[in-house]
Length: 461
Image (tube, rainbow, N blue to C red; front, side, top):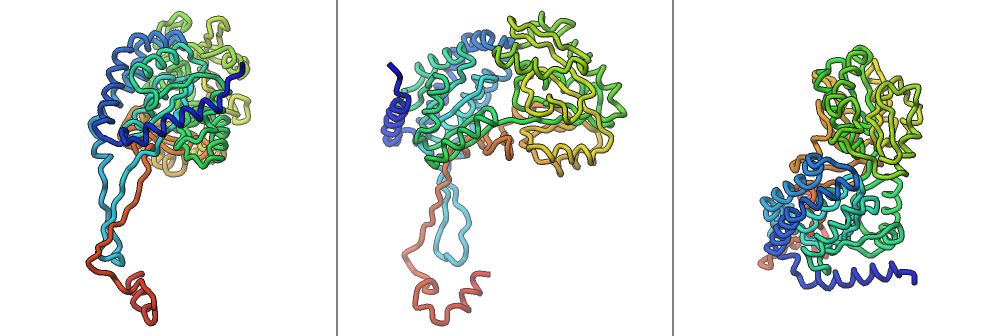
């Protein structure tokens, strides 16, 4: 018998609405207890989560803890310290024309939010937005990726053990389930994934006028200026690119290296890769694998054997692709068409910074941008003239790990932001309230207007 996915989603939403209407989730002490409960659960499930991440992506324990489990624990700790101040009603200024009134902003939860996570960081990218949803007082439905079944199974057990399913529930399934969810009458949808699927999510949400946050991707450039610290740049780029075998939405997608230093820089880059993963990365305990055969085939198809100067080896059965560097790449090569999302690093060269900026601005706005240079004028020029979600000067990826700055895309790379207070704000509606005194009224506003225009113009300049 075919499952009624639409009916199933409607039933979940009905249960969640009933639970939300009790007002429980709006209570700050309740929210705090749920965050603490989530933290305890993650700590209890730590070994199972690390094991599942290894099974699905061959993530080494250090990398899995740093970018997934530990990352989320740190985020919960930060949120527990600060969310009460974020949730306070804020009194703001009132225009003088409303003399005798006071204005307030009330942060309030949307209701039931849908959080859809991808496979590349399957734990972090599901639980990190959940932290903001809980802190803001929402109920939540969680949809993990079907590409990482071991992680999904462990998370489902953890969530079921931790929360009342009328409050927070995880729903597994493939395309049919996802389609039913995104067409459901949720109060908010938070989606992390590819640009094509993001468009489908936004179109479905629009039919129910559901607000969305879309954390997407794109081709994130990394510019290496002639005044860069070459050894430092090589090391930090190699780390940022080949972490998680390049399956990171903010990984440097391609390098643009100044012609004067390119011959010095590339050997340093290869040296850094070898230092990280050895002469045969297939034997390294610190190098991840590609998530599926489908993604393997796509990446292999992007390799141009004539341009590979390092790496290029792969093993279909082991889902392994070596860290690979391609030189003499042009802007029109196939590998420059779409986001790579794998351990292939094309290198382009430049001489004129203005032309580079023009080229980048001629493409869809990227999720991240990185520039390596000791020249502050170069740094400022790139930051000022190029629009991108976020990024680093003289580093890669690190901006994502700070709760003090928002993380999100712009244009085709996404909309909305989260992390730290931005997560709370994303999952909160800012309700505006003006409180008027009844002790007096200003007669200016009321008819008959007669000769009031002069006075009105004095007040409203």
